Image 1 (cartoon, rainbow, N blue to C red):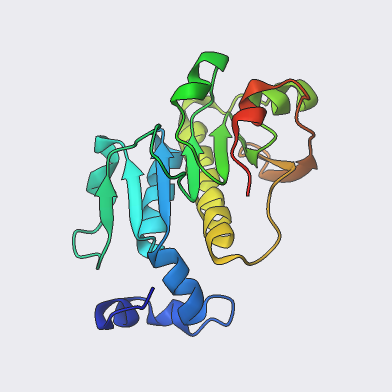
Image 2: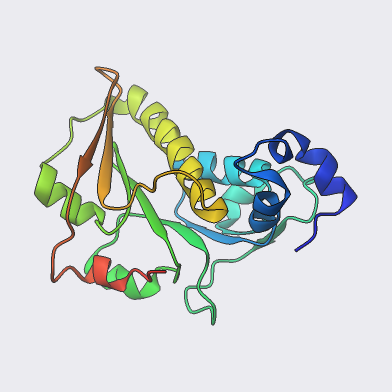
Length: 202
């Protein structure tokens, strides 16, 4: 995919980065990402990915207002769990077993829940079994906690799309806003976990 003049001008600061460059920016422009949840974390992911130049975002209607209408060549579309081609990446809500079939098919699937974030596998249920419960953040800090995790996961999605850095896969990131502590812990998926088995791998 070739970048047009509007894209080159808008993303000039990213194009000069050796980790991104024209090839990486073209990958972002050709990528399809589904945001299959709402809330502070999803809002940050949508805003960040749109600003980074992801070409197609499948989002819930409440999130569409977060996207700059002047964004060049950005396509917004409804989420299609049964799309013939999997999304390049997706952010999903905490899924029960019955929700697995309704989650969008994606090559890489991420989640954010209760102060934790990861790429499946492991899923949030496997993380809870391995790590136990998180410390409640309270009504004031919880939205701020989730927004920070949304920014981190958006960065992980960009890394995935551009193929740079070390992936979060196989680890769970935990953030406690009360103590300002951030930890990344290796967690294995359960061998019979339907959520982790359902994730489409590269």
